[in-house]
Picture 1 (cartoon, rainbow, N blue to C red):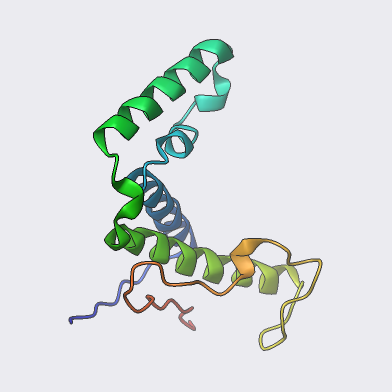
Picture 2 (cartoon, rainbow, N blue to C red; picture 1 turned 30 degrees about the vertical axis):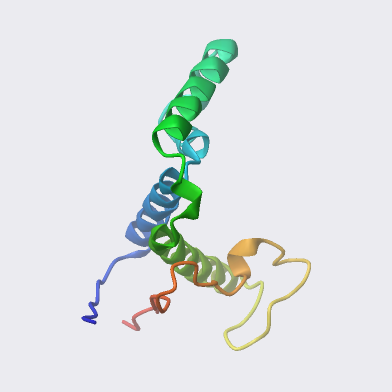
Length: 134
């Protein structure tokens, strides 16, 4: 299997993280979670309409992709999301002084799942991500 290296900055990595999460959720039928990320979603004052529209889109997605949650190959985007999320979370913890490189996770300061080691969902080896020393 071929492997590739992509060099991105922190902002680009954050965008890739969000894109991978959205793609993963769409592929497993969690359209409602993707809709919440649309620009302006929380700016709408007509919550009854938003709620009804969201549920109608979810109903349509479920009818179009009834087998979505059974397809293991769709875990690739989730794997990428976890790997990037983990790296960015630990880099923020280092930058904020919550923990120093090489130290174990500090509880309760680092409670979020973003600090958990990524778990492969796709059956493929996890991607790697590391900071480039400049």
